[in-house]
Length: 293
Image 1 (tube, helix red, strand yellow):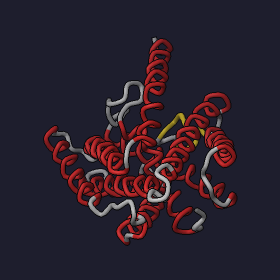
Image 2 (cartoon, rainbow, N blue to C red):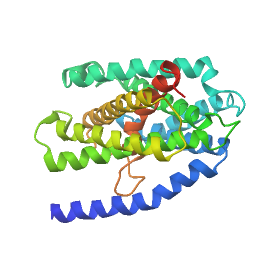
Image 3 (spheres, helix red, strand yellow):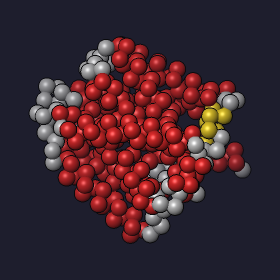
Image 4 (tube, helix red, strand yellow):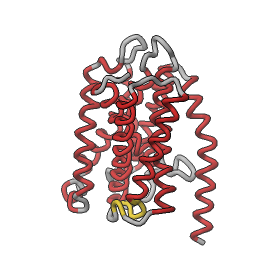
């Protein structure tokens, strides 16, 4: 029965992926900048809706209001966006992205000390909502900063960078899953996600190197090779941290999936958990530290 269920879920995942991949790619390259902003705004509102469950909001109306308030907040931020003005020239964007680094370092400490660390935030809805803000807001800023890159010169430059980061992270996730299933022996985080292994981590990193080499050679992204490799590998590690962090919050909330929006994949947060950490880290390294592109 369990094997049949796993095969059925895998079938749903594959069908959904086949449908979503061309839709996401088309949205990246065909939507104008403000259309992309609206799309990411919707994704973040749905993520906020799902985070409400992780924060302990059991009422449907509470989660709806959380998504609405979050949406208005992000829409207000979006008013500052202009194709002719680099998004990262705004001090709000820079500080938000640097703050994200601080949050993910703090999240690493929470993971390393789990379950003892949960005593400090388990019963606090406010803290868990703040954690959600620190997770989703930098992702929003980061995706817009990537998409807007050189938009006034070439409308597709930023789209290629968004595509690169998404393919990099999701391919590393798949590589980690495959390597973990085939060779997994040593548990990575037994108390948080028992199925994840160190062999899976190695597999994800190997996959990320392959993807980086492929995009560097065959796509129109231009960057210093050493900076791109270093930023990509660190971003993949950050993505794994984002995945584990969401798993920790789901475990405390007593839920398996953050939602049921995507058949076979769970919720929006289940699909972007790695990206919420990888995107801000990638931008902080490539744009704000190495100035490599």
